[in-house]
Image 1 (cartoon, rainbow, N blue to C red):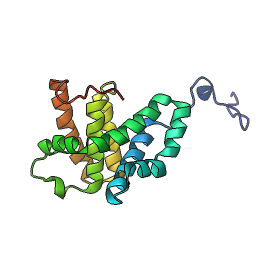
Image 2 (image 1 turned 180 degrees about the vertical axis):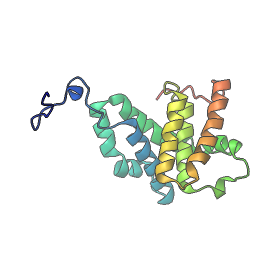
Image 3 (image 1 turned 180 degrees about the horizontal axis):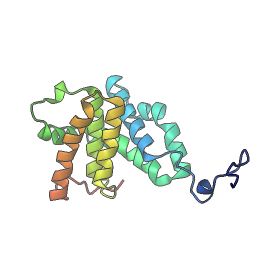
Image 4 (image 1 turned 30 degrees about the vertical axis):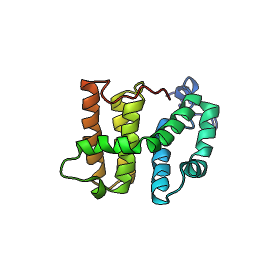
Length: 173
């Protein structure tokens, strides 16, 4: 029988040809942007302060590692804040039996960020965006948040699929 044990510290064959994972994956960016948006709303913190306190370090790491992710972070955060009234209207159009004021604040933040991403980052597949925000809802929302977020974002996704120009901003990030 062949000895399959490896020496301590050796690299496994699977790891030899693989690329190292990103230090700043987009999932982490999305999560932190949602948290910063929450802090901005709850604390009535100016966007620049919320960015400096909660996102600056992540932004700098992303700039070094993957500049496009740094720009994604910055645009997702500031763009969501800048367009919050419009995003809220898009969300309210999908609400059935709910009002904006009844929504859990974490769900509002997730939806605002998710809708901004759906409508401003056409290079990201709609399904990827949808799944990412549902996962964040599972981590930070209530037990009902994932289904609620799924239903609302999927409604907006279907609108985009039927008419891609209906909601997509022409602004580059």
